[in-house]
Amino acid sequence: MLKHGYDEETALSFEASVMSFVLGWMIYNQNQPTHVYLETIFNFEDSFDLGLTAIVKGLAT
Image: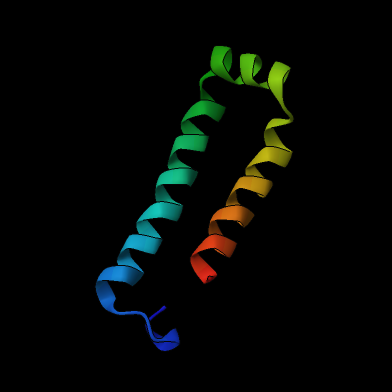
């Protein structure tokens, strides 16, 4: 991020956003009752990819 012109604080904020998303998703993934419930609403695996892509593309703008 620094190589792309972002200051250190902004780069760390972007990194923290991605880390928070991944950590939260993994917590839901490991919690079997929550995972089962969420699977009734949406495809858990596909939604992770979609969400991570949205975050990364949003940070790139």
